[in-house]
Image 1 (cartoon, helix red, strand yellow):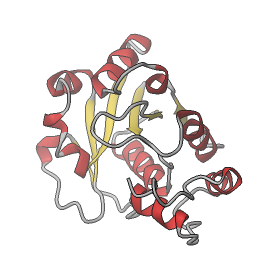
Image 2 (image 1 turned 135 degrees about the vertical axis):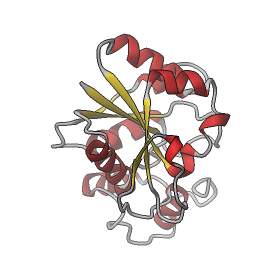
Image 3 (image 1 turned 30 degrees about the vertical axis):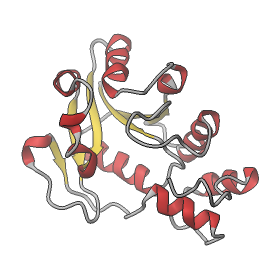
Length: 193
């Protein structure tokens, strides 16, 4: 089986994430995609929504998508969430399957600065999905997936929610309902991160 791995804070998960997962599924001929919310992000501020809320939003976002799963390995692990550790755990769980790390071009450009980047590449092939405004990908970065995806920034989305803007065109419907019900991202002091 060919398994895609899409990590991120998913704070909140939005239509850009889902579009990237679908594009990678097509380009990499993937059988399924695992969405893995980050526990403690090592290179960015703490999330606004807690781990339980982000996992629930991911589950709501993929309802009815049989080839998508949410995996909570990083939120259960203590300390910073490093991709190499997650891939090692996935390799143990799926020893006979091929792993494909799904990255936007902006993240792929930074892969060399990650913990054990050579081990990351040994454990998984990289599928690089183009992002609006990120420039032309370097073909050596991995499997190139040049597909149009929505230009959605998590920080801009959180600011828009805090301002009371309509964001229904950027979120799965069930996620938008969850955010409204739980009044997430309404605190202007924390949403800009």
